[in-house]
Amino acid sequence: MVVVSTSSTSLSCATRPEEIEQILSTLSRYDPETSVVLEEYVAKQCQEGTYDIMANLALLKLYLYKSDRENPRVILQVLVKALTAFPSPDFSLCLHLLPPHVLQPVAATEKAKSRKYPDDDDDDEESSVLRIQKLAKLNQLLESGRFAQFWVEHGNNSADDKLAELDEIFREIPDFAESIRRGVVRAIAASFSVIDAAVFQAWTALGPAEAAAYAASLGWTVDGDRVVVGEAKAAADKSKVVVSEQVRFEQLSRMIRRVYE
Image (cartoon, rainbow, N blue to C red):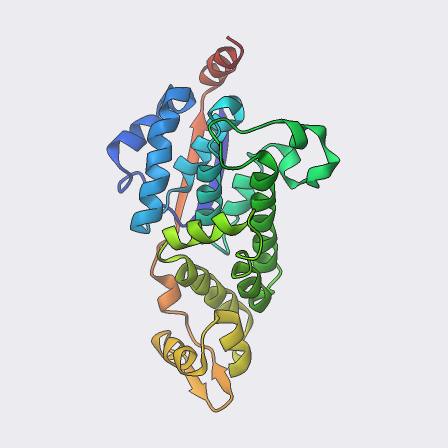
């Protein structure tokens, strides 16, 4: 039996829609026709503020097996939702299910110049690759603790027409900024007992008054020009769910045969 385990903030089997759970728990997860259902589920996650990493990974795997099914906008939505799970490794998990060339310089590969995504009349693959690379950069900034630079880069898309669609997707996820802020707060709580108030403002992208109110909502104390860090109460409003994906060997072999049929 092949077992892949991940730990992240996500819907559990008990809260996942029955239709999606049925797909994930059977060989239907390898049926290309289920991509439509999973894509609609991604849109629902964006609208409702829910998050299901296992369903999103299953969709990216379908795209990997059946590249003609790829929907570049949905891929961006999945990656943006994965960013909101920071500091979990969800974004990296998603990135590893994308074609390797998406992180290479666009001009360095003939494939990136010539191949087009299906049903993408408004954009070419170069733009799609650049958007994925921009999200990868944002993830790197978060992982390296460069939170102030993250917020600058996050809001710096409108000047480039090829990146402007990212702003639309950010707006489709109402809790995006707050989700990132919660991740930053968890990182602060794990590393600091006291932090400069100006640094806290820059890292949370809040003004002085907003930052003070936000720190108070966490149960932290603002003392002059510093913030005394306590337990991040507001950052723990989502439980951590450990999920496992189990695929039996005979199921795996049947799936591989179907790919080549």
